[in-house]
Image (cartoon, rainbow, N blue to C red; front, side):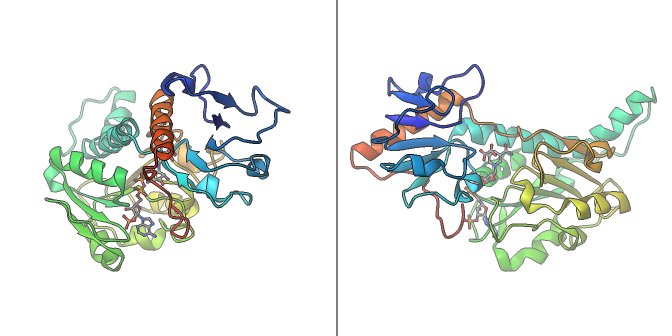
Length: 310
Ligand code: NDP
Ligand code: OXD
């Protein structure tokens, strides 16, 4: 029996993917029901005392790829936490990242402005191969986006804690950060929210990016977590030309407050944390598959490293 706490999108049911496995939706349907004997929980947002109500829990499944909300709960028990890794999510993220890189390459925001003024004017057109996309966070999502951006013709480089070996993509580890930034026109953030990444994307980082005065560059594109960006400095950098533009799917505070200046800057794309929403049926199928593995004695996959925080 799996308990799904809050991972349902309205109108969709996780059960459709779960191969007949019984599911309790909590707390919507079962307030007051005992959760003794429940072994599996599927969670996204976590109430502070949630896990205390499930004494027999053996595995926690995250309804998303990120687990920061789960790890920030003070009551999280010492059981494996499995994050969601699935082609449906990975493909969606790569679509969003490629879309944003192409929008900035093709200066779509400026053409939108020209259209609003009924102005017929051609802007200088760079080719993808003239721009370097630097991806910070070369995990499941970063690597897939990197490969797809390379197919589109961009020069792609990557940076992560441990250096990766990916044909055709120059990869850096932590110590190579300054060189990585100095080569980057389009900076893509796909980092998890951890103690180490908190406030990471700040003025000091943006100032180290490659300068390219012929286009509105460099550009910051973030779909990792809002906690990794310092929005006050980001806004200032967008206003003083340190950054030529941004595409943001994640924010320090979500929903993005109406008072945020990010809503109104003309070269900033704002999307409401939808770059790669979890597909509910795929999520059900994934959790069912992992439970089947666990119950047949095989190791669970994509277990979170609690010390690293992702
Ligand atoms: P992974 O765990 O596969 O990858 C994380 C990457 O970040 C790894 O390459 C890791 O390095 C790197 N990393 C972590 N901490 C540091 C650090 N301090 N310094 C340098 N590199 C670091 O995660 P995913 O690719 O699956 O997902 C990434 C994040 O994307 C999620 O944690 C989530 O926050 C976000 N996300 C956002 C969504 C959205 O809709 N906006 C949807 C899904 C996910 P190493 O490889 O060495 O471990
Ligand atoms: C995730 C997300 O982590 O949607 O999966 O943010």
